[in-house]
Image (cartoon, rainbow, N blue to C red):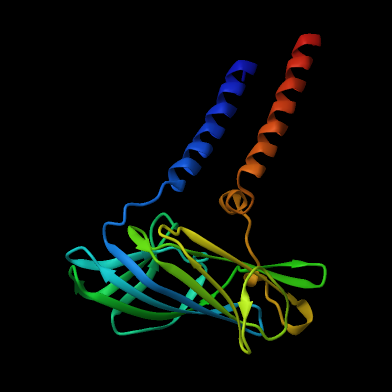
Length: 238
């Protein structure tokens, strides 16, 4: 491949990645209604996997609402419990959202309360003797968000991010008019768990970009620029 063609190819790749990030940063139109309550209670298992208990209250503002799309921490989960209003909980084809199919249709003006619990994998990474959880709780697609509240069992926690606490929980609560995702970080000593490999975070390209964002992209672009300069010099002196 000639140098100019190679350079155009690299530019096209990064232009596509940056365009996708920009598109995903746009706020979705809240056409289906409003999420009045979004609570998640988190507790770790002995093997490092997380129990996530979701409690949602939704004000429906569209007719014939029979499913909801939500961004979960990732698609490596098992459904433990779901209430009678939920027919199924499955990832969509793209993997960006999980689809909650409802047992019946709801119309504008209805208030919908949903409760379900998951066993969540790929949620921590090991660092020295620590087990560090980095968990993202995401939006409901096409719904406006009032606030999100995460309660994490605080027993044995050695470090937490910003938040408050009571006798039982570490608590993070944020109020946004258009909330897209909410990141929570907690650290434990590895010795309290019997950790399994399927608990660790998997870093593919998509997860790497999500974790490190534009800093990672900038670093990769600089590396490619260095490589291009090396190729230029070799062609000049070859």
